Amino acid sequence: MNNLFADLPTDLPEELVEVLAENKHVRIERIVSTGHASPDDFWYDQDKTEWVVVLKGEAKLLFEGDDGPVHMRPGDYINIPAHRKHRVEWTKPDDPTIWLAVHYDD
Amino acid sequence: MNNLFADLPTDLPEELVEVLAENKHVRIERIVSTGHASPDDFWYDQDKTEWVVVLKGEAKLLFEGDDGPVHMRPGDYINIPAHRKHRVEWTKPDDPTIWLAVHYDD
Image (cartoon, rainbow over all chains, first blue to last red; front, side, top):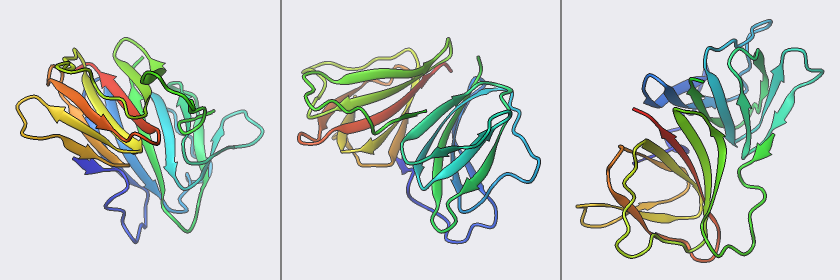
């Protein structure tokens, strides 16, 4: 048994993505961000649908064409259709933001 | 956007299972238990693999053939292979235990 809130790195130069389970249809990831955001002008454009929840910390997620980002706090979840372009505008700078992401085929 | 920790029923005669996302390969559920356990002699025997995490509360999960249950606390997660028989022996009686379960095909 493992714990989503354990083994948090104290120094995190880049966002940390760990695959918790994976097969041909599904990939479950823990993502840890500490102030990280997507590079300027970068948009995720993914082949799989992504169901994602913020479990600790805070993040702002921007979808292409929207006026402003969605501010996600602990427990907030979104289902992102495949190829719906989005980017991480902001994550909380001082404490780790922990995401759980489930990428799955339609 | 929805929140995993919102809309908790105050009175919960039976375990509450809500499907958050579903397609032919994957089903993501929020499960809320308050003192609920599997019926005597009942074992889950599932066609899909189940990745499951306790996000709030506590639970004891027993796998067939094991000497005793696994005590799960917030953040603890387990990947349960298809047809690995298991049962919920106990959940915390006073507060809701919130599980997130991802059922997926191999």
